[in-house]
Image (tube, rainbow, N blue to C red; front, side, top):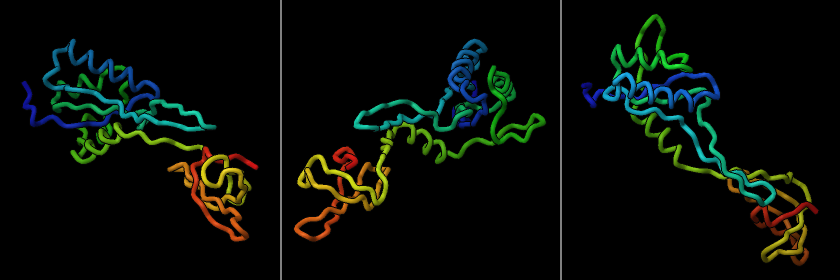
Length: 181
């Protein structure tokens, strides 16, 4: 049995689009070849991406690193051979070829990748442009028109300059409260 203290994370290069099948193949080969004490888990780094377009929310999983799979394992000649010869695996990242063993990921790199898989960030598709005239549909300024002065794609916010009592006033609004004038 391998010393669990020696288990490290390694990056495998795969054919793009075959990441999940490589993960499944690797896990089944580890069981069938009696390597569960050396090959612990395989992970396809993915993030849940929420896209909001025209007021509709769509959520899907997107691969963080297309063409790559992470594997937690104890590096030995046997485990290296099993992983390297798994269908769909083209090689280890960090291996210099000629049978050399690859370099493992640093613990902080693994933590960053695995934590990133748990955070979903909405992606706002703002179909407005700076200087464009828009109509405010909701809130305190409902019914007024103004010019777009700033777009915050990351947070779905739009700054609009409106004419209030003969004076230009800038206000920040959610993009879905606006429509093109």
